[in-house]
Image (cartoon, rainbow, N blue to C red; front, side):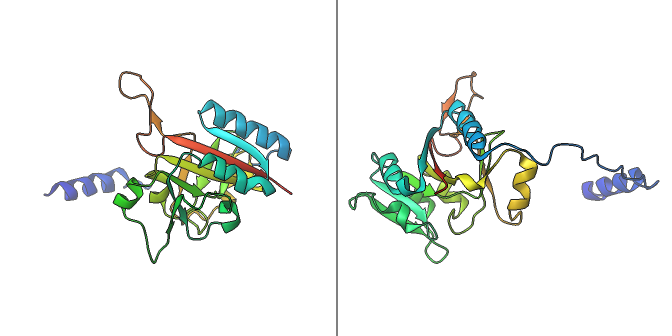
Length: 210
């Protein structure tokens, strides 16, 4: 008997009496009553605690804020569906790479690029988590994981307090990236090291509704 056959045999034996599956209790909170201002305040508090840089600005100031956050970058990558108006004030001398399904940037190309600019799908203020779902404004997971700096735009209308509020807003069949601050680990001698599994710098631009 092979190892696979033995494992399957044990599973069949364990399930031979067809135990009933207990009903999952769903008594957790599914909605919140926080105002838009409270949601923004809570999200900012969590992100700053995670050592992210956060700007809360009117939508009209998006381009200027993004340009300021990219001031030290010589190159950046964007998904093909990103709003061009957000990039209007980035200096012309800063090299822009557009990543698309037809012309995806290679890992080597991305490794040589300083920054990435994306939008976001939904954010959970209680945990300080920003979720990207791979749609046209956010692009492939690779572009948000390889460059050293991530400038992420969060429209205030996409912020919710609780995870159960976020899930119905998402297409769960898409590849997702959940971000809670810059990439960091303390696995080695409890020393915090940033940039291990993704961008070392996270700049979040929260756009207040007009």
